[in-house]
Image 1 (cartoon, helix red, strand yellow):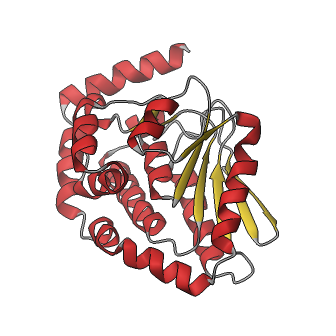
Image 2 (cartoon, rainbow, N blue to C red; image 1 turned 90 degrees about the horizontal axis):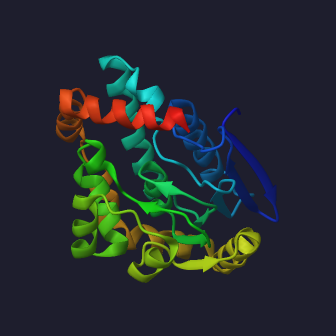
Amino acid sequence: MNTIKVSVKDRLATITFSRGKSNALNGELITELDDMLKNISADDNIGGVILTGTAPFFSAGLDLVELYEYDEVQAKAFWKLFLNFTANLVAFKKPLIAAISGHSPAGGCVIALACDYRIMAEGQFIIGLNEVPVGIIVPNSIFQLYSFWLGKAEATRSLLTGKLYNPEEALKVGLIDELVKNESLLTAAERKIKKYMELESNTWSQSKLNIREELIRAVSADQTEALDKMLAQWWSPTTRQILKTIIASLQRK
């Protein structure tokens, strides 16, 4: 595996994103993570998963530099992959905790939102969905995931402005559940997930899936129409120009 690292101890798997400094999401990372979670889901020797990164990032979101160069076939395949991966993540049956080690905008936030509990490190970090200012149409499935935790009113307000929260703000609105010092991040995540893992596994898993029934239905629905709208905007001159400006800024850093 080139983009993630996996360790297993006492039936707990810790998956650390390991793709450069910012863990930007590309097809390889998403595929490796999706495949690993499918394997873990079927492995009775693993009872739960922690997802984490390395400060100052959890994941910077989609790799816009790479995506910008895709042709139409590649772009459609990637977005389909990402939406299918999100659906799989939301329906993951075992305890899944995000230990958010730093910045987590856009796609990084989506991964965290799919987890059962989010613990974030203190610091000058950002988290949230900022797709609209970037020129990317947010499909209903992602909005439903956002509003599952924030409520529809807060999710609507923040999504339509592309608001990015600092950790304290994120805690206040329910985007994250706990805020700890960076050195305590994994310890806090392990403490929380072990409480889940101590419970009868089938009861816990089925209860999770029952609670998420409507959400799972929303993210697993046919995404063809939403994807067509996203891609039409993706290739529009205005979005291409926004992306070009963002990429130029990223490359200067």
